[in-house]
Image: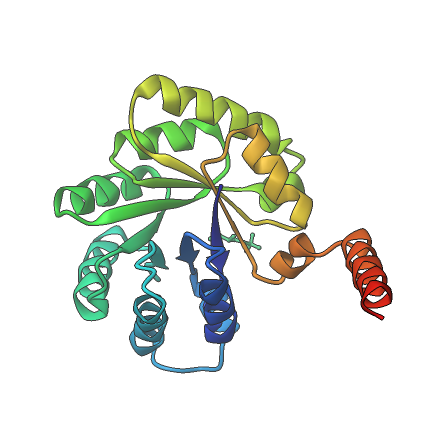
Length: 222
Ligand code: E4P
C-alpha cells in the first residue's frame, strides 16, 4: 500500500523516510505555510536532499502558487528547473483552464498531480489530460456532505476501465481510519499528515503482549 507523507516538515519527513514507510511526499501552499518562513525553493530542495540521503527517490509533489493559468505554466517549469529533483511532480488544481495547463506541462515531460478534486468527473478529465496522479480531498468532501468512499470506488472503476496508468491519491485525511478505508475503497495512494503514522503503528494490546513476553522470559532465565 503506497502511503505518502503530506507535509513539508523536515523532521517528520526524515522520521518517515528512516522507517521506509512512505512512498512519496506531497506538499501544498498551506502545508508550506505551517513551516518557519524560509525560501520556498531552498526548503523543497532540502526535502529532495532528504529523499536522496535515504536513497528514496520518491515522488515529491510541489504545488503552483497562482490562480493564473499562464503563470502556472511559468512557475511549474521554473520549479522543475530550480529544484532539479528527478521525481518532482507539479501539483495543479483542477479547472477548465487548468486542464490546458496540465496537458501542456505533460507534453513538456513534467509529471502532474492534479489536485483539489472532489468528484469522479474531475478525475476523469484530469486523467485524460495526462495527469500522473489525481488527488481527491476526502476530508473536504465530507465537509460538504459528500460520502467519499463511493466516489473513490467509482473513480477507481473509471480509471481502470480507461486503461490509463493514472493513480488516485486520497488526501485531506482527518483520521487514521480514513487511510485504510480509502485503500479498501480503491485508492492507489493515501497521503496523510505524519501525525497519524505512530497511531497506526501502536496498539495497547501490542504493548501488553510484549510486556508479558519479556516478563515470562525474565522468569525463565532466573
Ligand atoms: C493533498 O496533498 C492535499 O493537498 C492535502 O491533503 C489537503 O489537506 P487538507 O484538506 O487538510 O488541507
